[in-house]
Length: 373
View (cartoon, one colour):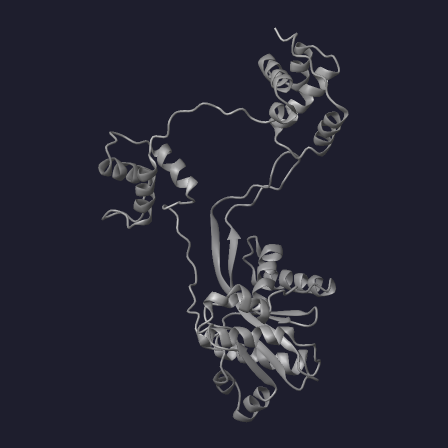
């Protein structure tokens, strides 16, 4: 039936199809049509092409016909497919979106597809509406009302901007061995053990472990990260009280940076991160001695992303802690091994955000941006 549809490609068309198949970055259907055209020009029969390309004979026929009657672009592209008329009009879709963005009915925590379908039926002349129709219309508008994200919503005011720019300017300074910059934070770690022994992985079989687990308490990680050198230090403690924080700072002064005149610490606003913690842990003279070697720079509230060490803790969790460990000694050994390897590889955080970029990207958030600089 398709004798009259003879495929004759120009050299440019042949090169285009050959390049498309060699790259393989197009949709599978488009690549199959390219194979069909090249095989047809080579003189293969429709039956041979259908077997080789793994398509039906009608696909071979349509592709050749669209090339002969149209052009290469038409032969490779999808034909418009007839479909049912959209059940919701534009106004009805707008009503669905507005309903999904409103509060759910009394007694319900969130909207579901069925609840939204029922609500739209009551507000329109439709007798029924499927949940799938609702899902598709919501997806087109980027809505998932049954999901919510918990997020820290900062109050961006003058204090926020001042602290942000203070930290960013600190990161941008040239390295000064006498005045090093260290990012500091802490993170809790749950000690979790296996109730049943996991089954090791085998060829063709993933490692399997039981969903049930045993809790064995928690530990705290104090993490220090050098901003201008590839160095980090992790200390495990049973808790994160003011005394533990003060001890960590004393080790930073006396052990890790004994020759520094002033260590500038970037940290968050936790209640223990205060000079008073040193007087709770040490005698007044000792507390004063340590504090004279430290200079604190606080990130804005709800802006922990400005602390480089948050990124480092994320790497630590992904590379080392993403498993079940219930023994404090084993945890300490594994963390120490990760720390040594990370330091030996001279890994550093490539910080790209600067004060100038902040003023551009967050310009709308800056208070009183209309004032002269």
